[in-house]
Image (tube, rainbow, N blue to C red; front, top):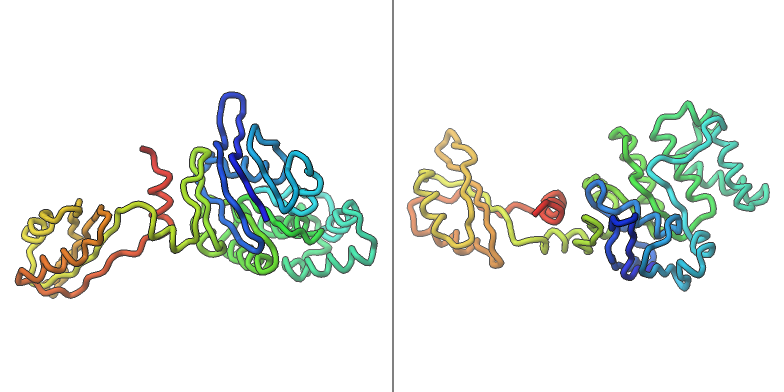
Length: 312
C-alpha cells in the first residue's frame, strides 16, 4: 500500500527526517512512536504531500509522490493534532460544507454524513455550534471530516492529545472500528495509545527509525537487559548479594522488601545475551534458601521505548 525509501527532510541545515525506510500493508494500523521533536509530524506531512521531501521516494499504491500528488491525496484522509474546523458553523453545516467541496451531490452528502454520525458518535451535537464543543468532540468532528470521502488510508497525528481519559477511550474505539476496513497511520508519543490500538510499531528518534516490528517481537528483541524477581525464605540479603554477584551478567541486586513471614524479595538486573535463569536457579539449589517465587519481569513498551530513545 505505502512504500517509503530513503525519505529525508532538511529545514535549512537541520535534518528532521534522515533516510527512513518502511512499508505499510493494506489494512494495518501502524503506530508511529517517538519523543517530541523526533520527526513524526514531518514524516506524516511528507506522506500526505503537505511537505515535499528533500530526497527519497514515497509510493502509494502505483503512484509516486512527486508525480501523482493529487491522486495520492484522493486516497488519504488526514487529521492533524488540532482539527482545523470552522468554529462559527454548526456541526451539520460544517460537514455538509466539507461534502460539497468534495463534489458530492445532495443524496451522497446526506448518506455519507449519516454514516459518519453513527461511526463518530455525533448524533447529539449535529445542531450545536463547533465553538461550544469540548476538544474531544472537536476531534470527533475532525475525524468525520477526514473520513468524508471514505479514503483508503487514514493518517492521524496525535489524535488523543489533550483529551481526558473517557474521551481517549472513545477515540480509541473509533480508530479500532476504522482499522477493520482502512489502513491507519497513528502518530503519538503516548505509549498506552499504541499498545491499545496498533498492530505494528515504528519508533523514530532524532529523525531515524530505531525499531519497526509487531508489539510482541519488539518487546522480546529490544536490548539484552531484563529483570528477574525472586522471593526467598531463610535468606540473608548480604549472602544473596554475594552469591548472585558472582554470576556473569547479573549487574545489580536490589532488595525490594522483607516480608513479615521471613521472605526476602530481591530484583536482579541482568544484561546478557543468554538466559541466566538456569544459572540463578542452580545457585539457589546450592544454598539452604527456600525459593518461594521466581519470575522474569515482562518487558513493557515503555521499557523498550526508553532503551531505544535514551541519550547515549
